[in-house]
Length: 465
Image (cartoon, rainbow, N blue to C red; front, side):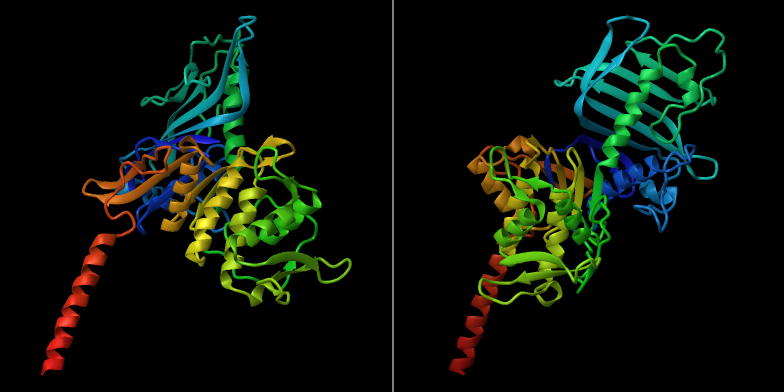
């Protein structure tokens, strides 16, 4: 689970400042306030880890990748090719890691948290090149256990420093250290140079595990279909447009997955669980998926809009059902310890349903599966005041603690984009409510009142005439 993010010189952001990421993180802000760029960088990092070419520091993407970031010049703040793209990621490990020094029996470096810091610059062909990366292994309290620094000096000579563990060269291995691979990897040749460096490979493995669990759901989701095709395969997620929501639902049901909403609460089969939430949100009364015929791979989604009404296909009810379904499915379909980034899950939903969606997402980060907490993280970009108010209410009621929630407001300031952390207390109050957070409500009320007064005066004058 991500716990920390800090980005410099990426697209609209000159410096985000350190961002605390909680199990449920919500980012508000006006259009074009840079909210989406934060998730886009993470997608760029993920697709780089999947790339076979280890020489590319950052895979900027194309029409077939997770994200197309354009050119490296497009990525740099102000299109300044002299600027350096810097970022740091911090995350909590699913289980503690122990790195052993084979040259010092009994000596281990154990931690529950990791941090990666990377610096990239434009090369001679304006392509991203890695200048350096560093890893930190920290214990549960954040105390540093092991620090690794790897990069290339200005003279082109590579270096690898590890503290407090001391690397020892193998006899006869006099070749120089090779440059790092991608934005986070050690060359196998470099690690083979030392008697005790093999354990360092645990760092990139843990980063790859983290980013493998990152999924994205965009704001533009596919419209409903009359039939859906599924051949029995297990899809990794619902897709950026929610196009695989029904196959994901079917795959989870076939696998016998069942969930509950928290510790010691009743379990339900995955499809029944999702149908329950759709009912509780108030968008439909019932929901089910069935094959068009025995042995067929085509399926139809049948819904009942209210109690006592006839079942109809998903295409014949309100558009909001098909739009919220991928958000619900992905929130609960994601594997344990995954991070789900969503943009505007409340789109096309009634304000009351937007508020109920906050309850569903609280459930998603608190849900259990197979008797263990799922530890799924949701990072949500939203414009919904109703979503926030329900979240504040649940904090006041003790359903979720302020430590489990992080809320940010992105806005344009005189110095550039600013990401302000909103301080929520245990009563659900925001201690530093920003100006014009959801528009200037008092100005609207005052303007409407003044307009009404002016109109009454005008109408009275007309009647007297």
